[in-house]
Length: 143
Ligand SMILES: [Ca+2]
Image 1 (cartoon, rainbow, N blue to C red):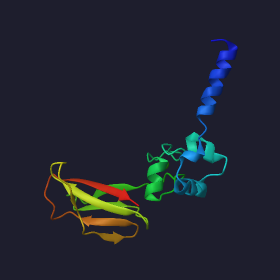
Image 2: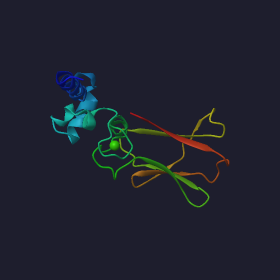
Image 3: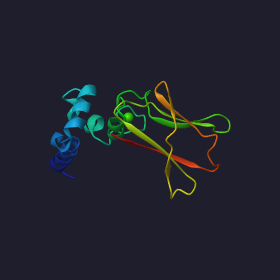
Image 4: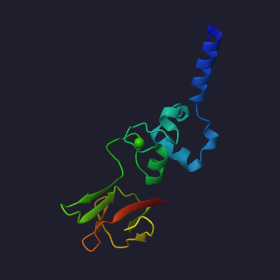
């Protein structure tokens, strides 16, 4: 590659790391502005929907949906069992304005919504003591 070709390639890579802001929804952009400066909004490593600037494994699109802080890796949405015999399922942190639908299935085909849960702090607590054994669980978040 010639020097000129190298410089052009470098420039192309640098340009591809800039984001076109008009492709984002106004709601997502408003949410990004809470956490990032105007300059940072154009940085693909910080403000793209698939970026994970705090490195917690959840991308910005998910953190926007779950109403979490995309710059704080300590605050992370979790679904986990509690108790030696998995007597409880904990879901959280939960945020107002987000709907959490917890479902169970024994065959990964038919899913049933669990309507009984208790809120403790910023988590939903679901009693699993009457659930069948070998059960799968999933949580669907929506706004
Ligand atoms: Ca993240």
